[in-house]
Length: 309
Image 1 (cartoon, one colour):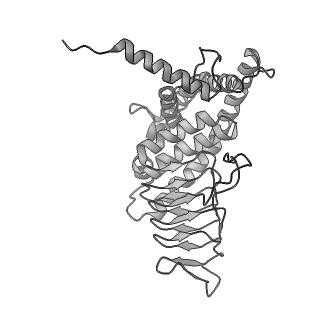
Image 2 (image 1 turned 90 degrees about the horizontal axis):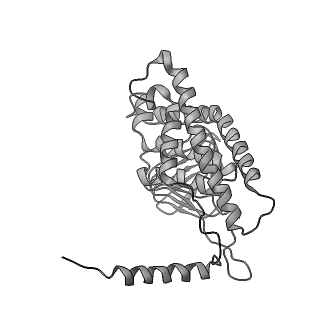
Image 3 (image 1 turned 60 degrees about the horizontal axis):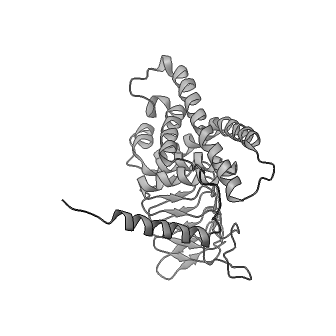
């Protein structure tokens, strides 16, 4: 029978953990910290999909006459499950800061309830935004036969459902939960949307694989992206000690009605003006005026001749 050096390996792993905690100044921290659960959040998001679109993403046996009951029941369960995860993140953040700062258990529990109530109140607006995204996909893709097909099949819509939920968590200062929800969609679709990005209504990602949208990107209304588009950062400023400065605006601003074709890479805090069209495989690090067209061949920018784009 095969044998393994379990004791020696476990000891070496303990040394590796201890070395990591020393470098991160985590030695002596409480050992019973609970992290938010990726599996739990996956189930919560699945329930919320059925709450937002009960007849299409809810249980297959659901009938329209019991739709309201299902929504209320599923919403109650999802919000209570979310409350537990929110509480875990808030407690994790308090421990990570290594300070009490007035955040005792009762304060954290009250803050978690407030956050989940705010999240729940935003769900009708999220549903309206998602309706605009679904309609944009249906109207923008000649292969789409129905809005139902779009909602059930399109990876860009799946990514947007997760993004819109994750963005609300991000706005509520729950960045770890937000990132987990966003990464669930990233793993499933290959579309990487940071929950901190700001995206207007009627957003359509066609095909989608390889799309990257950074944390500080701002996207207007009725914007269309194709696969492998990157809205990224050009450089990462550091402080006097050489540490990355976080939270600075470093991703593009995309105004209303812009179209960006496959493989385009847009870097830095630049602005793509309203109605601009960015061709495939373009590498772009400068502003583009409203209505302009940027071609790949020579990174040429053509001004509109009639102002209509």
